[in-house]
Length: 205
Image 1 (tube, one colour):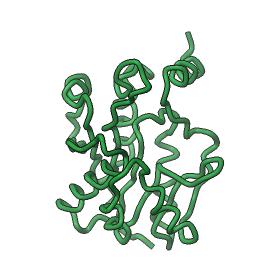
Image 2 (cartoon, rainbow, N blue to C red):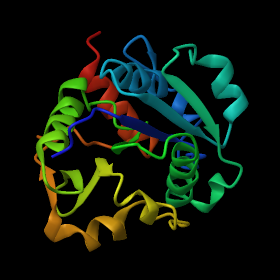
Image 3 (tube, helix red, strand yellow):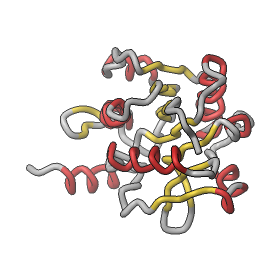
């Protein structure tokens, strides 16, 4: 059982979003932008630190968003074009460099705006009371992020260097992880059509 609350968040927002028209991280959502909305949700959790990985369009994003919270630290990934796995490894390396005693890292995406602080707190609660090294999220046919990885498996995330994220780590530990049901909140936004549909469903005119 994890007794301390030394958990940090790693918010992945480095991609170019080539299928979107414009910068996905800056798309409007709930009076702000997708990335700021995700950041605001994470700040509510009272974590040790929230690290944001930026890459493509990082200067434009920095100018638009509020990174002033003492909890928030921006990591620039110059090799973001290698994919999600590379951004995870760059982020984890940065976290471990400053905090070798970290109990766990919550890895999450900036383009899942339906994920709430309530759901993140469920992940956190299961992690703090579980004997398993990973608490992840159930999709229809797979397990994925948001997920909290304990300090014992973080070194394995350092070896990621592709566009497959943490998939093979989660597959390796599939018999020794907890996966929470998500009730369809894990909807990624990858195309203009997906964004428009999700926006219209969750913003009343």
